[in-house]
Every structure is written in C-alpha cells, then in structure tokens.
Length: 245
Length: 204
Ligand SMILES: [Fe+3]
Image (cartoon, rainbow over the protein chains, first blue to last red):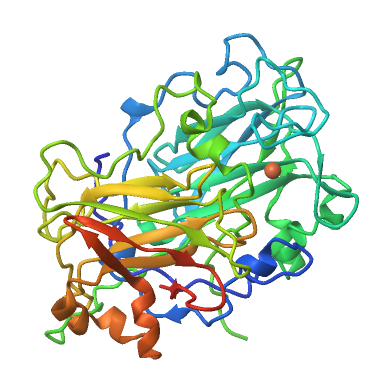
C-alpha cells in the first residue's frame, strides 16, 4: 500500500445518477428493501473521497490473473477466454497501477460459495476469482473460462446472462466501483432484471464485452475486450483557492 | 453546433450480488488457496499512533432484517488527520494503511472494525471536518455502492463545526452517522438502509 500518484489529486466529477441504475428497481426484488428512500446528500468531493488506498505489485501472485490455473494448478474446465481491456477515467486517461479484482461462476454456472445450491457441479480446479494491477497505460488481462448462465430466485425462471463481476479501485476512494460485464451475443442479457436496473440501453451496451479476434490465440483461447471507466477528476489550477488566485 | 465534449461516461454500476465474498474476501468465505491472505484485514499495523478503537454494528434493511451478505470498505486518515498514500499535505503515519474491508458475520450479521480514531481533515475551503471514517457499502440488492461516513458522538465540538454534517438539512438525521460510545474505546453504529432512522448516504 504505497505509490502515490501526484497528478491524481483534483476533485472528482459528479456521478451521473441517471446513467447508473436507480437504487429502487422493483424488477430486481431485493432492491426494494435495500434502497435508501431519502434523497442522497449531494456535495463536492473532499480529501476523504479524493485520496484512496494504493496497492503494490509485491502483493500480486504470478497466477492471480489466471483463473484457469490459480486454484489447484490443474486446468479448470470450460471455454478458455482472455478478458482484457483498459481502466480509464472520464478524461480518457488510462489509470495505471489500480487494483482490478474479478469473480465469477464456473463454466456450468455454479459459484464456489456456501450459499449457492445450483445443481450444476463445482469444478474441483476452479476457484472463481482473480486480481491484477493495471499497467502504465491502464491495461489489464485475465485468462479464465467463460462463466455459465445460472438461474436465480427473483421472478420465476429468471436466469443471469453469462457475466463476470468486477471490482475496481481508482486513485480516490470516491471512485470505488463494482460492476459486471456481459458477453456479446448472449440472448439472456435483454431478459435480465439486474441488467435492466440500468435505464438506458446505451449504458447497458457498455457492459457488453466484445469478441476480440485480434487478441484470441489460435488453437488456444478466444478473447473479449472490456474497458472500464472510472469517475474523472477536475484538472484545473483554479480550484478551491481560498486566497482567490 | 458546438464542439463535442469528448469525456467518457463512468461505467455503470451493477450490484455486487450475494457472492461478493468470492472475489473480495475468499479466505474469510472459506475458499483458501488462491491468495495467501485477504486484502484489507486491518487499516492499521501494530504501533499505529492514536487512540485504539473498536467499532461494531449491523446493516439493516427496510423490513428490519439484518443483512448477512453485506460488505463495506472503510477509508480514514491517521491520528494527525493525514491520509496514507496520495494526500498532498504530507506523509501519514507509516503504521496506518487507512483502508479496510469489513464483512458482516455470515451468521449474526454483526461486523467489527478495529482501528484508531482518525484526526480532523480539512474540507476544500480549509475548515476542518470532524473525525470520520469514510464508508463504501455494497451487498445484493444495492445497485450502486452506498457512500456514508462514521462520525463519533463524543466529538461534539468538532461535529458542530463539520461542514459536511452541516450540509445535512434535516438536523435530526445527522445522528444516524454518529457512532455511540459503549465503553472505553468501544463504539457501535448500525447502517440502516431504508425507512425509520435511515442512515444518511452521500453523493460526493
Ligand atoms: Fe453473479
């Protein structure tokens, strides 16, 4: 936990709450009792949101971004894929050195979690999580298996499209983000109440990772590209200068 | 026509879901063997300066149910009010990492955070905020991580001067952010997601 980035200090852009899913989305039943009813208290970011933890390469193991091999050292079963992309901010700059963590079901759609009772079997060689730090240009890469779709109790016969969960740090705690990616061409995307907590089709589309044949490795694995954008920072010298500069 | 602003849009959030522990605290979940240890087990190292404190509480939904699948991260300054890492004002106590990942207990739903009480940090205009711990809370059913703060009821004078607390128009709601002192160095605070006594959540 070191590595300050001297340029990453400005106030954060405001969140566009119409672009994100609303808190109260009855199609996704659990949100009905977990959504705050009172208005959020809105104000500009402070040092508490503009600073944040930093992570060093020393904590990342060699196989941490390889979910095919990182559980037992024996390969997991499923369609081998590379997930890659860049972490950018709203200014379009790649964000280097940020921690990207991801977790997912196995190729059959089963999670390694004591609460998941789906009848698809566990894969003894698939743990289901990975992590990495972005490179100097904000790029990241994982090798994994494509997760299966799975049913979930919401309305009867709801199925989650194939997806991976993502957790991303920026340089400020106020940029903290969790999201999910979907996969190009999956017919379950349009039917999913969690996907549809997002109100705008354009916003849903940016969660759909594109098949990327340029990064696929012949006779080895396919590839999907998923870029992630974090809140930007204002870059101005005329910022909160009490002395009126 | 005007020039197009070429900003990107922040990636839309999606719920962390019920299985967030697989990704963020696999060892605590009972999935050892991937990482040697979970990240964010403590925001301090032995020898951290300041008053050691223990915070406990629960996350409660609008139906009065205690969440057992909630997880939050905390971020705080050291005892002198300096943030570790990229605080432009200086270098923090090297024994304070400032960041923790806190999962509710799978059976009781009670969470616990052992740390030190943070110092006061300036608001952008230079006025001092009261000692506080920033919190980012996720769970199944929460579509976008909730931002809140933990303040301390025994910091009445600092709380009265805090520009962030002052921004909360409904004065009686400020109390939802105050951890109650229950013993020497011991505080309690629940996060209420909805309804009676709903915690103040921020957009900042
Ligand atoms: Fe999932």
